[in-house]
Amino acid sequence: EAGVAQSPRYKIIEKRQSVAFWCNPISGHATLYWYQQILGQGPKLLIQFQNNGVVDDSQLPKDRFSAERLKGVDSTLKIQPAKLEDSAVYLCASSLAMSGARTGELFFGEGSRLTVL
Amino acid sequence: AQSVSQHNHHVILSEAASLELGCNYSYGGTVNLFWYVQYPGQHLQLLLKYFSGDPLVKGIKGFEAEFIKSKFSFNLRKPSVQWSDTAEYFCAVNAQSGYSTLTFGKGTMLLVSP
Image 1 (cartoon, each protein chain N blue to C red):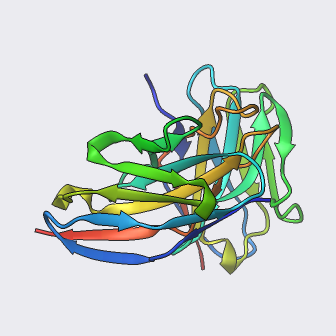
Image 2 (image 1 turned 60 degrees about the vertical axis):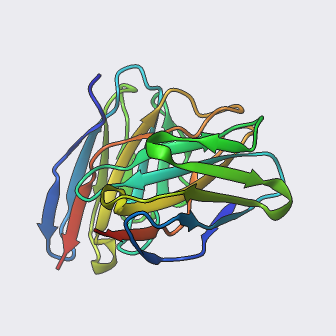
């Protein structure tokens, strides 16, 4: 079974530039997540999709971050303009379901490491 | 909203030593509990999970965790660690009701020396 695919693996940009990350979840997984992991911290949820609808984007800095999952499959996370504090690993994850008692088993991609200079 | 606290940021052990990593959560309702692991150069993966039933759960590679509801704890244990257990370990929690965000702790970096 193919895992969660992410690209690019690494990206270096200067502040105020823009960047986009792509994620393709495991086939059949309705729920897709973007997490931000800053060095020394645990992953922090940015946005959560159920199919192509947003379920939770309460921690997404909407003035500079945007994400979409137009066809309910793959997803793109964009940052424009980037700030120094956006340097982090951006993790995409997917799961079969996200509501109800037996949830929380996420399958992660390898992440996209962003360095903002 | 729930939160997770992991007691140690770094742990260094020799091979064959016993391991216990602490995890406490804060949430008033019923929760699902997880330990995820990230080996060097690899992606985050599930180590073990607790949904309900027996509070002692066993995961891969000889790891186990015990849910103590009265203490809001879900500590990870392994009786004898190996060099290959060197990794970062994350405790995570989500609420069982509705659409619930999976919230992670800050992680514990375990280094096992041969």
